[in-house]
Length: 482
Ligand SMILES: Cc1cc2nc3c(=O)[nH]c(=O)nc-3n(C[C@H](O)[C@H](O)[C@H](O)COP(=O)(O)OP(=O)(O)OC[C@H]3O[C@@H](n4cnc5c(N)ncnc54)[C@H](O)[C@@H]3O)c2cc1C
Image 1 (cartoon, rainbow, N blue to C red):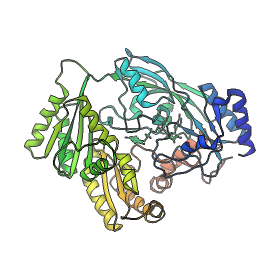
Image 2: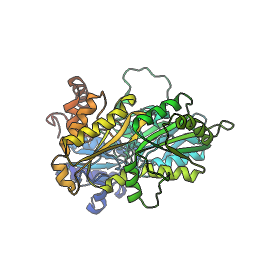
Image 3: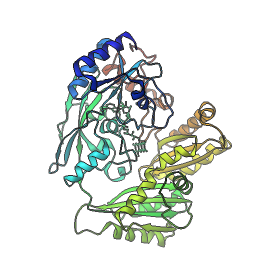
Image 4: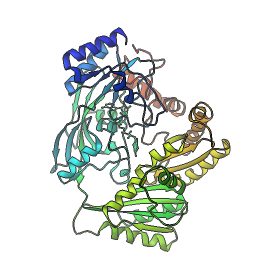
């Protein structure tokens, strides 16, 4: 630990007690590597404030002492954003102790929650009040509100409700100078210039520490149903989605899953079963929900929507859930894909988006191009087709170990994929963010005006480079950093 880090740790211990600090390397170890096991850092201490005032004091002291800080929630991020630098030059700041739901207003459809609240706990608490926070994703048992805000997370219900940008009505944030920006008031109209809330959403902890958020709620789900449909190709999936969207606005999710990826889930995730008896090249998982009594039940709606898909030959086979546990079983398959793919072996994974109508062609042509340019690799894509966002994986040639792949062709494969994405008018990060994984690619592929603006914002708010060094944008060459 540097003398400045020691001073900060001693001050936090003295002011906020032992709960707020750990220097035990065994206790810190799980928080130093990312969920995918790609990045490994080293933080000499983990600070765990219990209140917004404590966060503000820690950040103020960090600035005064020149100590860098990496904010962290559930550590489920996919781009190494919450992993500290390997050289021990930053301390971790965990928001997990700040896990209070401050209020739920069912009439106003608003909840005010602290950054450390775990998403699944918010789901349970809002359900008790007849309300729902609609964003959900596979990491819901660990991901925190602060992390979800800071990565502008998406998930499986974006089709209907949007991502965090649409679901956050206000934020409380400690800025890099230790001041507190209180923007929790859920104003419908607010034209006081730059929108700080939107600026801080997706900022990946580089220009502020989110301590609480005001979130939009919706009526609780009365009933839901899901259909698992076998199809021939992504083009047919998109045609089916368009056909359904022309007939209803209640489709919440439309996820595409290749047959081989389903196979990986069945191989690696205990207790999973194939929803359909036959083999299909591709599958889609569609969910519909009812939030009002007296309307067409979701299962009946799905049946009605699937009828023309069968008539036109888009659907090969389908099963519609008959119980909540069957819906859960379908989603368990979908939510387990990341884990199954991790178990399947090394792959370069790309969270990318292109305009929805171009996605089917992109999925096939980009996979063919990657396999042609890197013989022995195998490319596939799955995910949020309805949002024009898939997770595009290029698997290493058989038998190649992870480190050889990452140090060898892996980065060149990613550059190819991102070039193809940009050529298709897309984004190299649809929902996971930039973190440390995509920083160089962001710089390589962004128009200079965009990069200059991002750096100017970082420089204006965090000129010392205190918050989350080496993530998203860097102040070249780490200018002004302590
Ligand atoms: C199985 C699985 C499935 C997933 N599915 C999806 C998906 O469908 N859609 C999707 O968008 N993501 C998905 N993710 C990614 C991940 O869950 C999200 O990025 C999530 O928002 C991260 O939350 P976290 O609390 O774990 O944040 P962390 O991983 O701890 O941090 C993520 C980033 O946010 C910053 N940060 C964390 N807390 C704060 C704070 N309070 N203030 C400021 N900065 C902060 C960190 O510094 C880091 O840059 C998935 C992850 C897993 C493991």
